[in-house]
Length: 95
Image 1: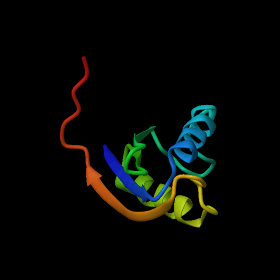
Image 2: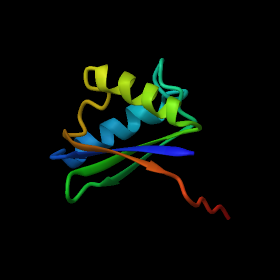
Image 3: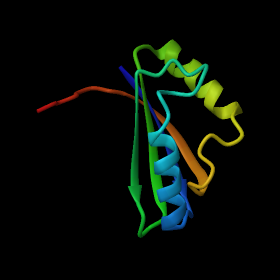
Image 4: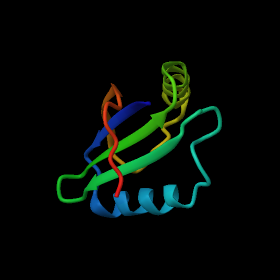
């Protein structure tokens, strides 16, 4: 499994709340994003969020990244996108 981690900075707490509310109503990843799962981490005090998408294959990761990069912007209200990084998920633990 692979992960795309986008870091956003500079959002106000109420903007983060609005983004959380809007995204929690979505049925899944945006069209054209072959993601397996999505997660958003938020630090309202710092105005920072991490948007993490999980993908089964490297090809799905590349396709998802290309699609997300063309969106206008997919996460309006979360501040400015400061970085995007890619990882292999080496370990996943569940209770």
